[in-house]
Image 1 (tube, rainbow, N blue to C red):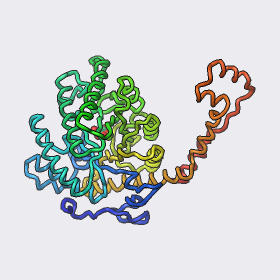
Image 2 (image 1 turned 180 degrees about the vertical axis):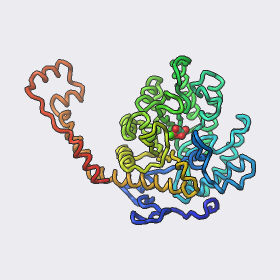
Image 3 (image 1 turned 90 degrees about the horizontal axis):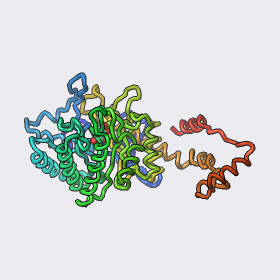
Image 4 (image 1 turned 135 degrees about the horizontal axis):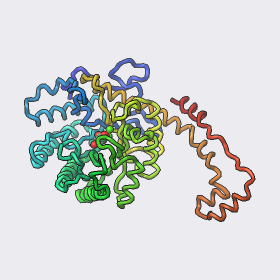
Length: 438
Ligand code: XLS
Ligand code: CA
Ligand code: CA
């Protein structure tokens, strides 16, 4: 498979001193770190939509992307879809990316009816199966796009129209079937337009109930067709709607609990969505992890000077380190992975940039993994944290933790205290240690 990107070699590890732009400096797929290969730890995935479908348009200008391999397509949208898919597999193979993720309409043209869309999807799934067998590349997750088409202007599962609710259900049904057929390890629900612009026209309560009904129907159907992977909800606080219902991890966990759906869904955490919600990426990952809900990761980064979802390739080593620290604490991200929900900038318009963007992200996370592994091995923060909370291991603290304490027993204890002794939190020192490893 060497046809669409003839000037690009297979990207391999050359070490930190290499100045070859088409090489990894930190990602060495078969190198073992803490008992697992880097490939097993990182489970990288290509996002079909950004890499194969994005053209570089923005609200002020047309697409800029130059994709010479698309020029050979006639006016047949299926032929173009097949070229994109073949190009995608060549790209993943050359980058040693073992997984991909797609929305239904990324891989197949929607045509003029659901039936036509469904036929196109089946035909594209034939090609995907063939290329997956040839290359060993696997599907990390599938999903349905319930936000681009004008029918979803008022939402999908939370639309004011029951017909739209049904149409969205049909799309999810098909996308789940495709995911099962392609042995996808996860299925993602990102609430694209599930949210509101103004409460002046919104039945807030019905919309939330309907969202829960929709998710529950989808989970039942996934069980029915034998889907064994993880169902994942991807939180995002805003954009496209002013207020998205799946605002952040805490909000989604509360929602799932309210509707009795906890345990059926885990979360797909995206870095850029975390910061849009006013949290750090690490906060969202940790919140999901301690609630046994960290399923998978959309590995990108935003720009803190901009208030929107810029979906950039992740190159901030602080962020990748703290992310991998959470992943290692959980014992790994599988069956989830690190999906590059990231697009090259509008000014990075050549096919080479698609490779350079992924190399930047893969090396960014490989370096984060190496640093996080050293932090874990040396117990840099663990011992400090354990000591900080040691008052809960004995005496009154132990009685609080084991449930024996009452408000009365606590008051009796408090009255015996002349002076409470506290220790410094040493934040600056701990940040210095972190910097030492980075
Ligand atoms: C958009 C989301 C989207 C999901 C998949 O902001 O990140 O791309 O990951 O629908
Ligand atoms: Ca995402
Ligand atoms: Ca995003």
